[in-house]
Length: 65
Image (cartoon, rainbow, N blue to C red; front, side):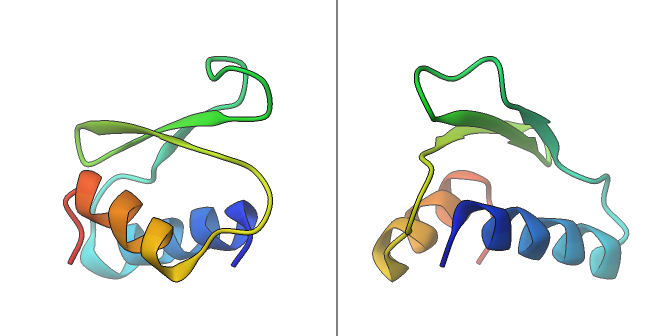
């Protein structure tokens, strides 16, 4: 899964549950990383291919699943 796919999935989750859409801060992360604020929680997502374990970690940090 690529970062853009994960962000699309987060937007879909927000739309389906009636929550506010995630905020994406492309200029706040270091290098090719970006910051995502979702449901009041903040995390950093790297670019490129994301492993299933990494995706689970990001979702757990954002309070999903």
